[in-house]
Structures are given as C-alpha cells and as structure tokens.
Amino acid sequence: MSKPASRSMRTWRKFHRYSFGYSKWVSIVSVVLLLVISLTGILLVHQDDLKVIQTGRVPLSLLPAHYENRLESTRERQGTTTLFEEEQSVPMRWVILDLHTGDFFGKYGFLLYDLLAVVMLVLGTTGIYMYFKIRKNSVF
Image: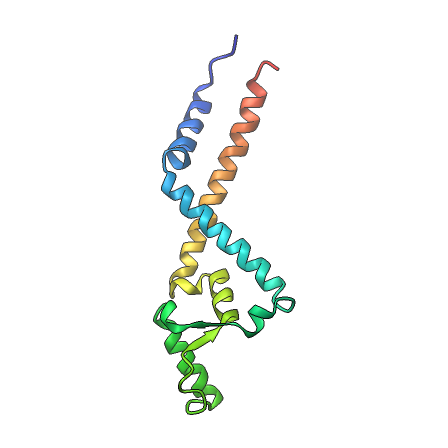
C-alpha cells in the first residue's frame, strides 16, 4: 500500500505538470534552444580545428536583416567599402557566435535566452524537489 501524497506534494506536482508537463511547446522550444546553445558552444571551442568555420561564409539572403547593417558598418570601420562590394556574405564565425549569445534573434535575443534559463531553473528545481519528496515518502 502506498501513502497518499501530501497536500504540498500535490501542489508541487500540479505546478510542475502545469508548467512543463502539459505545455509541450515550451518544452520543445526550450530543448531546441538548448541544443543550439550546446552545438554552437562546441563549435566555438573547436573553431581552430575546423577549417569550414575558419573559411566558411554564410550568404546574407539566409540571415536576418541586421546582418547587412553589421557588414556595412564593419566595412566602413575597416575602410574596405569599395574593396569587397560584390561579396554579400558574412563569416560563419559571426553566425555561430551570434547564435550562441542570442544576438542572432535581434536586440532582444538575450531576453529569450534569459527566459530559457528561468524555465530550466524552474524545471530543474521542481524536478529535484519532487524526486526527493517522492523518495522520502516511498515505501522502499
């Protein structure tokens, strides 16, 4: 026979389920963003080992509009505005670093990553609490 769950435990379960159990889209988006952060972190650590990152370029047509402005301002600072006019691509390192820091998603991208961090903290904290609470209340 198992003991009925305490009132506080039921409250935590409801909160945990409501927060992440029923909200599949929040979980899916969180996992995708965590995978992007993880993969780009690995690529940044090994960027000197991978030639494709060193020499690769990404066309501006595949990227958000703020990359064109960034490319133009970089050319102006370096004094190369007329040197590479036909080149309409950015270094792959820019894209990888921006994906890793959240700048890829615009000037409020860091807020998306902050929200992801809060979601993961709540999920982890409630999961750990529930694990130890259930384990303490279990018969075995």
